View (cartoon, rainbow, N blue to C red):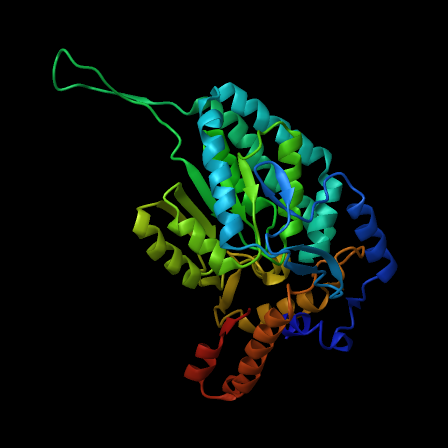
Length: 401
């Protein structure tokens, strides 16, 4: 029930005794400060220029905590994506010919700038994604660590020497960039999912076209602005957002795009895999999972409760590796259920900028409705707990979403 109560906070906050309602003044103050920041951008980035959609169409970016509009960003599609691909392809020749040390210096500078703007980036993540500010600041450090890591690895893209079969031959492998990379990222980690994909691509000499989620594009644009400030040349990193199917189709159809990297749903991943076959692109997919959390009867109860809370409630349950269900040994089921229920009831739910809040809003109304359907499904089957023993054992495999 704790999960369900949180999920319904947007439509019935009175159900949550520990719900902290958002401070409108605080929200407005943060939004105003960010819009005056040097990292705030609300246009796409193509060839080092900040541009609108060709037809002038825009889409709204909303604060999931209040529903208020944060900014309007371009609603881009196939035409803008092709422009971004062409820009990335033109920049590939010069970027790939830089020495590994030169690319490393650019990435290191990008890392330094991300960390020096940690507070602003964290606030931006909370504003458009909703997670508590403490978690958002943690994501900034986490996301920056990928750039730091690959800034160093850029200098260690080693080849191999292979024993030859003939005495007068020498065989060696020289690693080269594959080309333009299309990176499609989700909304739950709007900075880290980009840096984890773009960091290694740029380190080895590739250029990139990034399509962030339409729900959280502002963090991606801020990161791209810092990349420009770091001296990463125009066209090396491009950002487009808007019509997701059209953008995806353009990336798949272009022979200049040689790699697709995607984090998201299995359904979309299947489409990307099929589409990439047409031009034989390399592809990396991180798709949906079905992760159980199993608690055995010899578990330390306090440790188990903390572990399940972390596995299920991080980012309000909106992570790729979140536990989908909890399976508890019947020998400790009652004790665990009581302790876990109490721990969930103590979670403070509310606006991510409020001190002490650990559970922010779900990303949008569709997510709320999805979780509400899970709640109704669970309630409709709650009578199973009072059935015979085999039914009771089965019921203790509990799904939480």
